[in-house]
Length: 346
Image (cartoon, rainbow, N blue to C red; front, side, top):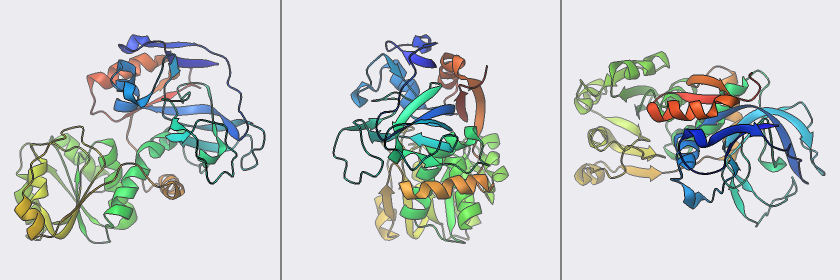
């Protein structure tokens, strides 16, 4: 099979598109013929540069921490899946052989694409117990992006913030992956009133196209004053931020109203941010950091995407042979939408 392999850390050209042996599924594993894998700033680009060595990646390595595709082959003991099913897999999973009905696995775990071969390949083997079924109406490219971002956004807004219908929510980073998904979950699934913001008019207005009620360009507008006018002085019930921009987050924090909640799963714009502690305790605000997601939310996220309630932002779809180019593109513009690699493209 073909795969994008790093033999050493370094610039994008260390990603080589080359022939490697087809993997064979072990007991309890499923082999997936990959149709999509997303390129990620940290878990792919920074890993390739050698900036994430603490995660345990050891060249030669096939990157790709998620994938969507079709079940291609079953390992011994697999009964949950059939060849031809549309599926996706991502993230941390067992490294040792594990039965698909195992409930108490105690062995080593690691991310695909980090501690075990990843999705930047024509074929990848993963434990059956981490495989997720996809609605057949959901495009593979969309499914890979949904897998990467929607469960995190869902967890933050639904499970952690407990955002309710008709509550006000301020979504930071309207054009980013977690921001754009958060807008749609808040509006189309929960029925909240959504204010979105970004550092340019164009990026803020993208949030309007995704369903936000109001968009604020904080580079030309005073974020605090605008939010307070919109909410009639009450402030927002939930602040959803995954950036931690030290220049703008302090203003956003002051827009949180009584008994409000701030939720976050990211800090690539910070991470050190000053906040007004008087406002914190005077308004009885809760701050919750919660990376990751809950496995039980995945089917709901996939179905919401299949039903058109969540539309992920994909900037480019490239063949797997262009993996190095995809990394160069992301380094040149880290704020772009998702790049998807498709091994089935010529």
